[in-house]
Image (tube, rainbow, N blue to C red; front, side, top):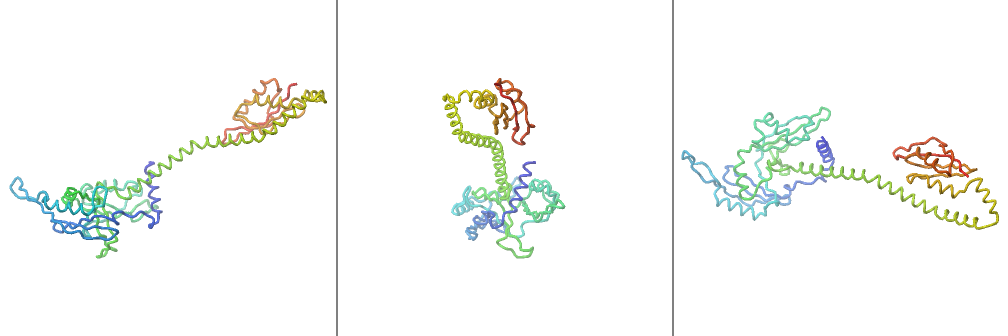
Amino acid sequence: MIADVLTWWSRQMLDLVPARFARPDPSAVGALLVEPHPGGDGVRLLRRQSGEETVLGNFALRRMTMPDATGVGVPGDVDPDDAAVLRAAIVSAGTREGGRFVLLRLPAGAALQRDVTLPLAAEAGLDRVLAYEMDRLTPFAADDIFFAWTVLRRDREAGRIMLRLSLVPKAPLLPLLDTLRLVGASPRGIEIPAFVNAGASTDPNHRLRIPLAHERTASAIQERRLLVAAGAACAALAVLAIMLPFALQSVAASRLNHQVAALQPRVDAVQALRRRIAGSTAGGDLVATERHRLGDTLEVLAAVTRVLPDDSYLSDLTLRQGQLTISGQSPGAAKLIPAISSDPAFSAPAFSAPVTRIEGQNTDLFSIRAGISR
């Protein structure tokens, strides 16, 4: 199901690409064209380069006569001399494995065509559907023809897709195809000049292309590339989804470290003031009395730091008249009351406001009030 969805999506994306940005067919720019003679006794070679065609010559392909079991002569293999001449011409034209495209060009009207209507759901596998339905749509079996199709229209409301099916029988072409493969020029497809507006004239810029059985069509290659790109995008999104929480946690930790560093000078100033007060004899008794009555702020801060878990932090701390009020965030606010009660520095801790859960962060907002033990 995922492959079908990706195939459908890739075709929709291809339909949105303007024609001027679409990648041209390489065979329309450069190719070696093989035209069979009407009598079947030879071929004409043409070279297409930058859209211009040049005739390379006509080459005979005489077949040697071999007697059968009854003594009657039947056509056999191509004459070796003719095959050698054709091979030399192909080599001089620069054709080699992975090089120039080789196309078998047939005369206009050589292809049989008919319009076909199929369910829209069949678009994801038109080659398989047409091969399965070929004996119903045409007088031929799928293994006996070369065929291709062109999408004419998609009717999404009716759930139908209209195609133009083009086919060429294999049997008359098999001897020539075997000969071309023997001389090192395996055709990648069949090219037929297309009629203009169903008239009698043809336009060289309009060509019908029918792939051979072993060839993957350009659209299939593009769809495969889009499927690979879509798979890579899905993999990238999965990696991003895994790494994003760790990145956010690292950013939050870095932000807290900067806040602690910004508060450090104030803490140093308070500690210096405390040392001066402790070392001064003037007013020592008054300070000691008030500290005993209200509680030592630094000791209370140290005790709060000691009892709170590492994953909890405070946003507010108030010490007034021996009553401590702390507010902040913690993954488990309910566990803070037992932790504070276990320390002898505090008495009767309780929540001073309802605990609030922060959606999407697994964190509770809390506010706790406790007495200071003297």
